[in-house]
Image (cartoon, rainbow, N blue to C red; front, side, top):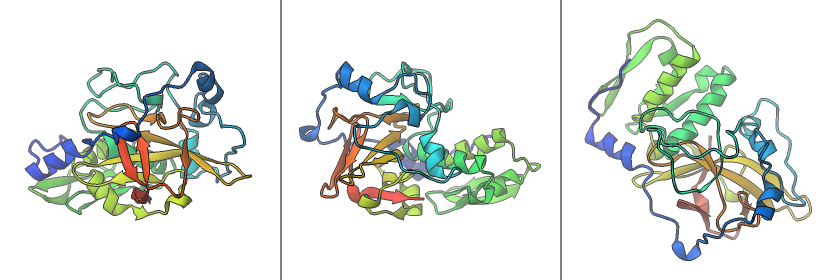
Length: 290
């Protein structure tokens, strides 16, 4: 089904400025790059997944999770070759090198899969792989619930201004190709605002794989926790963050410019009130979960 040609001004605004900056506080940001020696200690260029590409600082260990969990899905997510660059939806290369690795998943050919969309994509891909079709649903900014099972059964979403409704137009189709049509359609009408309202608040000290830092609205941004490790001796926790951004671009693990010594890992400090990433600053209270 073709996407609606006309989107209301409200939804247009949410879609195209949902990942607008502000930039992180410059007084707290360092542009220092990792030395080659430090980089080689933490990154295995031959690693093909999150788990095998990113090594741990001394004293840290990865915790165990159930085999079919969302955590294992993200931790073992395939990566593109180490030399790959972040690509925009139109094929252009992103010149700002804030990435430590690029997830091996398409971005699409339209300016749709931005920040919150990337989070929804990863969650939906996991649920689809597990055949948990009834768990795939996202709310539009208008509060309409877009359920994948309705889409797969042949219903399509008809928009009239801000109002959405289902109409039966297709035969049932649970194929991956049809699933992708669903998720890219959802991108048109969901974003940081709707996703932030849909997720549950999480305490920063309890951060885990699959949790999401998200600021909803215009501007807004969202990033997902891809992996976590713990130091058993001092109980310190470190984690990896991934994002898409604006315009729509490759989903990528970001560097930690605040602490190049452990980059791309971020260290959890319960006393801190902010998390500084290369292109966005979150409050630690912005953490949520599915």
